Image (cartoon, rainbow, N blue to C red):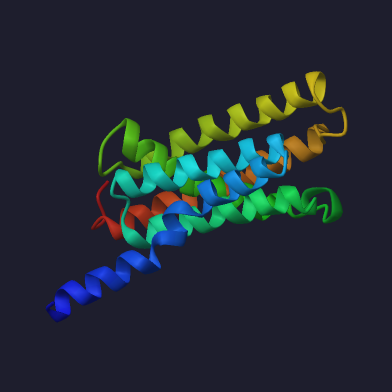
Length: 175
């Protein structure tokens, strides 16, 4: 085995948690009958597999996977309820990272900054509408106050613009 094969194999081993932790978490939660939490973990698994199979650049893949896991675990640990501001950094980070991933999958392998921002805005609005629907039909404890929604949207927009700028810089200043 050459040094290159060994380093490739080591890299693949290190990436196992990046690519499969969401599925492992979902399986563990399902085994304990925690079906809602398992469904959330499956969303993490979806983002992980799409990022990997769509060949998201490694730093973006690792960051997206990690942010999705943090968001899901934060939900399980009720951090959104316990720490009033916790959802702001989550909206910032996740919306930007997922906007890059979704745009890369749906538009092109090298999306423009404008495509990322538009996608992020759509994702943020859809998320807020889902929160409203969740409040209405699932759990009235979901915070849908106008000020919370506005802050979530501002954080998501800021995260999306930041991700678009970082993506553009990574992509050689493509307009």
